[in-house]
Length: 513
Image (cartoon, rainbow, N blue to C red; front, side, top):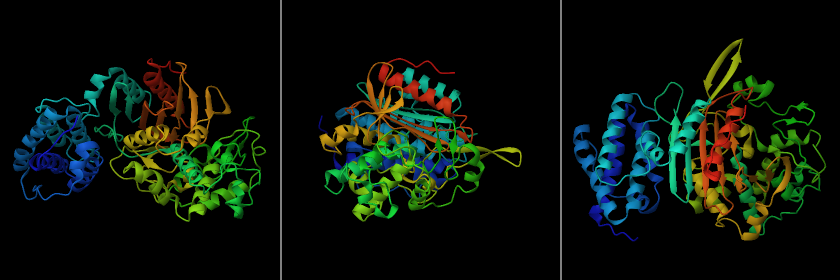
């Protein structure tokens, strides 16, 4: 359905949206941080609403007003905006409502006045609802959406009960979009995790890197079955290792983050958050590692098997892929990511980090460790992910991950033959789970197939699942208290299976002991 807005209508939308940000900023006690977080949320809007809010205009005059004066102007504008959109395009009314509530939620991630903030959020929600069109989001982490899909809301609440601090989920399927959250954004807090907050996505990074390499194959700059040594001669790689083997984890190169062999023997690599090096990683979590030194460490160790003669998950493969991208293009992987993926898909919330910072809003990540015989828990949301590099260093949002995986599998990023190569399963030895090029190919309990690549990033985790055509997706962001013993691992696997079964099989999974 087409919709035409007058200049006055557009002014009403902008006044309502940015006015809501101003009201929340005034209520939080941390106005600058709240306004920044909420404004970022507004700029992530899509569709007609996104177009209107992105336009620079001089019709928003909200400065120098008291909170009461702002409320008198903004709350009626919110109601008016919902009414004018609802008359012409109810979907855009829902879009507007979801955008405003995401901004409201983002403003509450760091708050000093929870009771005042909650009251202002209630007034904004009431003003939106007075417009007569009910949306699919809600201030409390999509409680309204939970009423529409109670089985999903119940699932994420039970996942929190299993040991997570917070969970946010985004589902796109034949019933539309559902977004929900449960738990809290931080330990001891009351605000729920932002439903489109930033999260360290761990090994989902590999899907982005594999896509970049395949795009360079499509451009004729890289050969999929060409020896990787042809592009990276400085490392003395085995000439039998091809680019395909790097993306497929069949190269046999040692994993710089450590290897666990079939007999249980552990071969240490760099200090990582898990096992005996947990405290060392904690003490050095702001250290910067160069990708080259990670590769050199790996190549100083014996290969796990002859190239092409086995399958073993190795982060080294994807750091080599990163270096290959940079060598072939003469640009950083971040620049190439913007050129080929982030820019074309407008993934404004996705970052290839170059330091410890993470953009707001976000849910907090934690790490429990022992220091001088005492158990301590630290907020490690800020950490330098260069220790894992392109094996898992990226940051994104649930909306961006949905956009990415649906576009990728929908054929918008790769030619059909290369997309088919990407999703062709290679045996891993893991039941019902094979590997393509940067993606897992999984057989569900319901007999279907999904394409995915999950990731954990010390206190953060992200799930990214889709049907092979990109039409149905499940994205989740989780925050937890991690530790060297991987105590959360069983709960993570149960959460993953529970959500997959709910979304793709229509039934909950039976938790494993």
